[in-house]
Structures are given as structure tokens and as C-alpha cells.
Image (cartoon, rainbow, N blue to C red; front, side):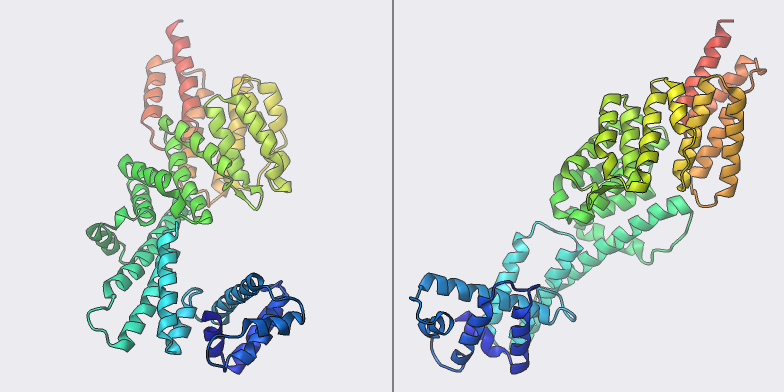
Length: 469
């Protein structure tokens, strides 16, 4: 009997810890478990099968014996004992490896092999295939190896399986870390070396480990960040995510989702309009699945990004519904300001400039990128309202803001280029059509510029006016 066999392996100190474990409401809420354990202890030193009726009588007195209930109670206790064994050594070892080590140290080969088979089945059934999975697989494989070595079974050693598990886990961790750091580099212009990254990439390619979905995702994600002009890396990254998102843990799935969005947003900033629909669909999917919310809260940046994509697609009714629906999911201190900002953006895009500027008038943000975006919106609105002196003031104010802020990263150059072309729009004395055509061509060729679409619209309008004079 497995329950008695396991209990008999515990020494007095471990049995006392087990009793404390069962007495804890945190671990066990069934008061019968202590009674079953106490009734089982006298049976441990006896040969043969424990007398279940005697155990029943110790617990329930003269109450008629119920075999089904007795079996259920012992099964529950067995489950708690297994959890206790894991908990007992959790500080030192992998959660699921402990029962294996425990049985191996006590030379209980049969129990070890049964537990090993259980662990292998658990591994095969697990939908998750991230680095935690391969760490777990490595831990179990190492226990099997140690067991085989003690039995001196030559030719049965699982060396390659152990090596692959630990290397795959490491490669996933390494590439994921590199992707995170590269995202930070793009904002803060930092440099962090990645030792042996080229050797790791070559090893992954040689072993064809890009076919492992989670590892493949981070491999292609890393390559897409390094080679932004080669869309095949990003396309493969999205394909893996769409087909195998169930192999990521929930939090990891959220981070993967954000990695994809960051790439698409960067492409939008570069003027690649074909990514609008991709991002819009991703956001809808993320909202439906609920993993954009963290403990019921929606990041203010995510809230804004979703609204912006809807505005770019002219889906105003959807955006207004979204803003109202998720406003209360924002942190309290950001609700009104971000709600007003995005509502103003909708009104501005609908050319309702007077109402839009009312909402934007007193808004200010501690985040420099949100503040820059708000300032840019004011510039556009005042230009559209033909308030050119006020527009000029806000352009100068934005330039001063950029000089003061040192941690805006690559965005600085995008906004500086916007300022340069916006400032030229305020010079009506320039009447040479060739001058304006040259500027218009330069905007198309400019790699790093924000507000490109709006600038193109204004420059085209200026050229059309000149053509009909």
C-alpha cells in the first residue's frame, strides 16, 4: 500500500512536521486528516495490509464502517503526504523533483520508478513548453540519471536528454533577456554586451531548435529587433505566437504580446501603415482573452495605444465605447487625464478642434513621451485653428522640453524632425513652389519622424494652393 509505504519512510522528526502541516489551515482544511494519520501510525510497523476497519473505528468509534469513505479518506491523506514531501524540501530543490530524490535516498526503487513514471506523464501532458518546462524536465532527467548510475546500468544513461533540456532552458532565458534589454536600449540608448550570443544563435540553428515554439519565438523576436528591415523574422515570430500561444505561461504570453506590439508600433512610427490592422486585431484579441489586464487594471499606456490605433483606423465609435468601458480599469490617478487625452484625440481627428483643445488645455503628464504626444496634438490643433502665433509658441516650448529631457531615447530625433518641418509651415513668405516640393520629398525620405501623415497632408495642401494661384 503506497500510503503506508511512504509514511513508514518518514522518521519521527518528519512525522512531527507532517502533523504540523496537516494542522495548518493553509495547507489542509480537512480535520479528518489528522485523525487518519494518528490511526495509521500504529499500523506502520505491522506486516501486511493495514486493518482499515480498525482505523475506521479509531476515527469514528461505533459508527458503521463505510469502505468507500475510508478509501477516500486514505486517498486524500496520500495526496497531502505527497504535497508535504514537496513542501518539506522546497527551499533546496525543484518542487516536483523532491519525491524522486526522497525515494532514491531511501532506496525505494519501486516507489521511485512509479513516481518517475508519474513525472514523465506529467511532462508529456503539460501544454507549457517554456524554460520552466525544460528546467523541470532537466530536474527529473537528472534524478533518473542519478538513479541509473547507482544501479550501474551501462548504456541506459540519458546524457543527451539532460544536456538538451538544460541547454534549451538556458537558450530561452538568454534570448528572452536579450529581447528585453534591446527594448530598453531603444528607449534609453544604453549598451549592454551579450556574451556568447553569436555562438548561441549558431548552436540553435545547428540543432534546429527554432522548431521548438517558445525558443523559436524568442529567436525570431531577437532577430527582428536586430534586423528591422527584414520583415520575415517578425512574420515568423507572429506566426509562432498565433499558433502556439498555449505553450507560454500567462504572464509570459502577455510579455510576448507586448514584444509584438512594440515592433508594430515602431513600424507605425516609421510610416508603415500596413501594421494598423495587425495591431488593432492583436489588441482586440488581448482584450477578449483578458491578459491585457493585470489584477483587473489596464496600463494607462496600453489604454492609450489601443485608442490611438482605433483613431488611426477612423473607428471612432469603437474608440469611444472602449474609452468608456475601460476607464475604471485605469489606476485612479490616471483615469481622468488619459480619458480626456484620448477623447480629445477623437474630437481632433473629427476636426472638432474647439472641444478638443478644451480637453487638452490643462493636461500635463509626468511621462515624457505622453507629454510630448500631448504637446504635439496642441500644435496640430492650433495650426488647424489658424492660431499660428500660439502654434509657434508651442513649437518652441516642445523644443525646450526636448532639450531638458535626456531619457527620451530614439524618440528625440523623431520629434526634432517634426519640429523642423512644422516650423517651416509657419513661414508663408516662402512662395517658391520648388522649395515646398523639395521639403515634401524630404518628408517622404525621412526615416525618423513623428506626425508624418499630418505633415504630408499640410504640405500637400500648401502645394495645391500654390498650384492654383
